[in-house]
Amino acid sequence: AQSVAQPEDQVNVAEGNPLTVKCTYSVSGNPYLFWYVQYPNRGLQFLLKYITGDNLVKGSYGFEAEFNKSQTSFHLKKPSALVSDSALYFCAVRERGSQGNLIFGKGTKLSVKP
Amino acid sequence: DGGITQSPKYLFRKEGQNVTLSCEQNLNHDAMYWYRQDPGQGLRLIYYSQIVNDFQKGDIAEGYSVSREKKESFPLTVTSAQKNPTAFYLCASSSPRDGYQPQHFGDGTRLSIL
Image 1 (tube, rainbow over the protein chains, first blue to last red):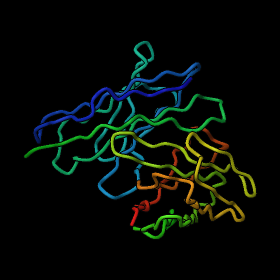
Image 2: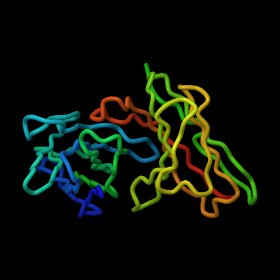
Image 3: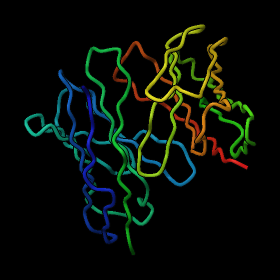
């Protein structure tokens, strides 16, 4: 069965420092991987996706994510955090070639302090 | 601009009452989804529809019903059988033919019990 794990409920970072939000996945085949961000009382906004090719994917607002097949991970990163990056972040996976739906992690709350 | 509109933003339900949440999209997407979001539990799939006049149960369909009479619309009814309806409900859409396309989300409806 497909699954996604976000091992940290909350990540705290000082403004200007690099941030990492972790995600590991389990699928039987090759995955499509996604990151979304959610601000309070809003829907999810798409940040970036991994389909194929370069393992380092760049997305919106300066975020990037690194696909690591051997570790089945897709960690979200940003070189320099902003207070406005504080939000809830979701990782999601779908098995390539399947008609299955997206499977979401439980979310990680990112808090960036000035 | 294309997008997904959910209404109302806040909804209150009395005991024994059915309530309907609206979701409309103008993205010309074939697939539409309903998720329930509870704190610390991520997103759980209630129902989804890949095409007009067809829909399937997700992981937590009990106590909910949907219809898909038009491509643009996918209303969700929370019935009196749903004993714990208090949650944030999110509607999403996507182009299912391309499994790597991200889902687009509305801004949600927050349902509470009176």
